[in-house]
Image (tube, rainbow, N blue to C red; front, side):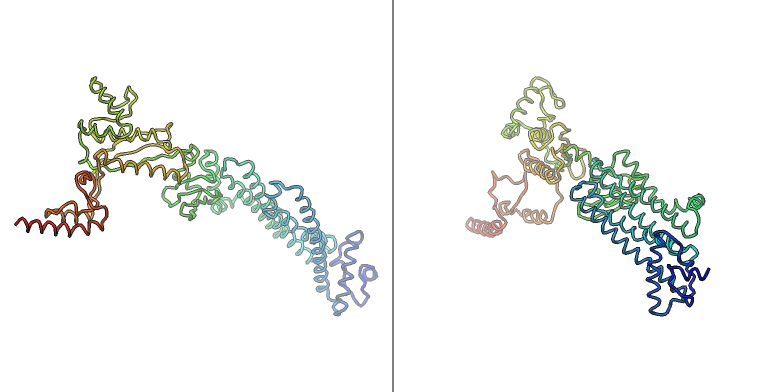
Length: 501
């Protein structure tokens, strides 16, 4: 047997080189035999240079290294050819599917398995199964192929999700968690197979033993499982989409949803910060979704002005005549007086179609005016609720509430509409002899101290309504004028007093 092996054309060793080829050569014919013969000639030539051809261990290691080198060369040539073909096809196949695959480097990741597969094939067909190194290299290569294959499959799942999200997920449902779940399952399966390869047992036997390990797995993947349950419920209830504006109670999250995964929901807040919350906390707690408001293209305006109760006065004929000059008020006052003269009091659901309001007080008249002004405002929605009311009086005054809807949900436009409404309201208060409640400031104390000894109000700048009557008193236009007027007035008064004396 020894002489036969030595005389074999595969092993160009002489009797002085007693190396048992069966330890590392498994084939005796065929294409694998030719490859093994070629590799062995290379190994024999290299070892002959250094005089190491009698060492079985070195022969085996060098033979395996030569097989690895051949596998890498063949694999990378195949990889280069395949990627070249893919690039050529991509010039005519510029679709969303291809773009999704290339965005996750799917083809590159698949081609990475080619050298490993070539090495595995060469080891299996050229290295003898009696060689322990063959078994070790085979297991390592199989594990490596499993890892690369799982990475490639995960990339494929990501590409499929991207394609679905762009083409099919028109409602932007938070289904990315399902893609992540598939990836988790793939890695669990890969882990089980790798363990089976290491311990040389069937993966089916390992799966059977996982039943007792279920509690540990539930603990490890608790967040992922809860996240999946939450994602499914949010999708079924259609209560959360990517791009929605939400506010989560108990957190500083108030902005746009940018990503929904198994374990987190990312929200980009309006201050450009990012808040991450657990998906399960959204269904176990509460959150506000403003999507329906955005879709309706309207947004509510609900704000109050605090009216000082002391400024609410009964409406006199003189006041009514004065208020007739305000746009829309003449017709309202005339019809209300006609109804009153006829003994018909209709301050609510007026049969003549007048807005809710009274002519009994200046506050009731102002309420009617603001309602008519809102009805004529082109920036206010006329198909949604719109009313003006007063709320329960507080220690800081009577809340004068505006409740309506802007005819847009755009943030900047909405703020501008809301600003214009309350700026007009503030400007018109004086015309109805109303004023707002404000706490006394240090300036009020100074003015009070200045006027108490009998100083002239002409010297005070910025007296609010209704105390300041420009038709009765000529006040300085600027604080600088007031500052220069004060000493002159005082001096003038002193001179007049002295002259009178």
